[in-house]
Image: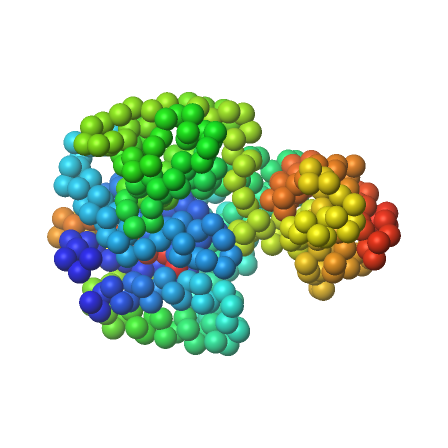
Length: 356
Length: 66
């Protein structure tokens, strides 16, 4: 990587307080993200991917970053003749050019950090941009749109695993997945998707993020030295397969739809103990929020260890992600919904308030 | 080498800062600024100057958010 040091101008941005959202659009749940850009603000690509709370670096490596840097450099050398493969990588139009334009963030943060005082709390975090965008819909009693609720879908959403030590080489294709149906194979090198040059996993996520509810994308891969074109068919509802429960923005979704409850999956033994089949709902309360709006479930009587077996009449085997998605799109603030829990072998009927 | 150390210190801090206490976070942010400000390879929180440098040197920008 050291040989690349002289090839770039390096910039470190540490706050989103006055972030130009007409230029910088990325996965706001990340704590680390990179843009490769021309001086005229044309974006060559993005780098940085995360899929869990605990393992922040699972999808990133020095080798992978070095490959992304080399690919960005090639795009820079080919610019502006290659504008066509960069067109889709540029930011899209937004109603909110700065974070301060969002109603829930207006006036809350100064443009600069308070380095002499409490500097950390003077920083508007990137994830707050997404929180603010969702809040507009929640406050209006409207469902949060799919693209906002399930942002930057991971490659695994379509059944792909990419090797983090590479630019974008397939290391696994899940059986019977969208990627398998498209014809992806292990060791395929993904060169472009939907006409966009792909230099990282984050670039793939960017394409998926902007794909339609149901869509068809053309992928170009290098396989055994030859190029192959694959058709990726995205069926209706594909986006909802991505997991949002690890995201820091799920904290606000929990306030809205679970009254501050944090769930975990149940074990086979726990399911058996409460008499729930494998295709039935059984989410265990791991944590009950203690303060403010995050204590709404606590005030309603929920406890750690409760196992939710019915949620507003639904008994399907939801994941936490699916439950959060349901509440964000199918409930409104002010509603109180019925929830059935198992506690110490007994079935209890509870009422859970939905909140802003 | 100093450049790559600075970058991967940034990656590591990304996961670290979510769990440390508030006053430790304040210290970490100040130390981070100090560390990057002393590194001539980086423009710290100054995109406009970095863009001018990119224009003059005809190099691409690598912008790290953390």
